[in-house]
Amino acid sequence: MRTLICILFILISGIISLLFSIKYAFLKKFSTQEKQIQYAYKSLQRLTKGLLFCAGTRLNVKGKENIPKNQTLLFICNHKSLFDIPILVSSIDIPMAFVGKIQLKKVPIISFWMKKINCIFMDRDDIRQSLKAINQGIEQLKNGQSLLIFPEGTRIKGEELGEFKKGSLKLANKSNVPIIPIYIKNADKILENQFPWIKATHIDVRIGKPIIIEKLDTNSQKNLSEYVKKQIEILKADI
Image (cartoon, rainbow, N blue to C red; front, side, top):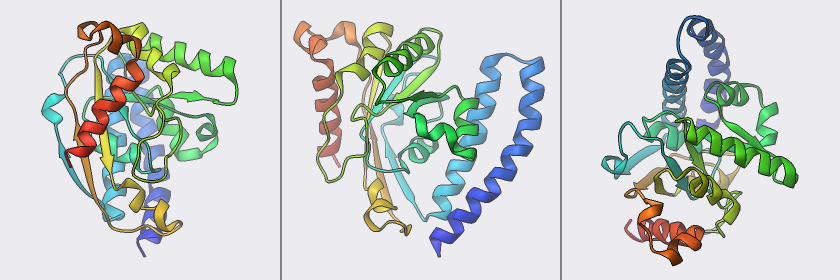
């Protein structure tokens, strides 16, 4: 039943997206890019909260006070579910783009919203395109656009964290913005564990304190991916 409700909600969201595009077009013509992104993100946030409600998802978010205000940030999170992004967008009020698989560019409703908040599409099978996507992300961070990445690169099964790809952490090293580590627990229980059925689930989200790269010791800076992974493992152990 929840699966059907979610499908209907997604279809309705397509209609809402068309209505949204009217005001967005007005903002694009007469307003700043910052206001366009803020409007797009708030609109997307309402839809993700609606989707989670339809799925029977209950969020328990702790650590929001650790998110600095009025700063460009790189959010780094573990990845286990298609619902990770709706969970994070619903939990974080700072407009952020995210790096997603290039295949998402062909998904009608999802790609519509991703483009409006300046998300980056990455083809992990194409090294040249992947490097181009990372460079694009670095430029967006330098220009004040916060980003979300999943350094494991794909959804990981089981309780353990996967390997954090060093290449993804270049976004932090090259832009020198604060890193916000995040851990999500139980997201795979919404859909993946009993695919294609959606199950009401209690989700824990833990947001860690900012990681300031220049304040880390030399070894931690050199092995940034491992350092960030350890901080997320600490958040995981705290639940």
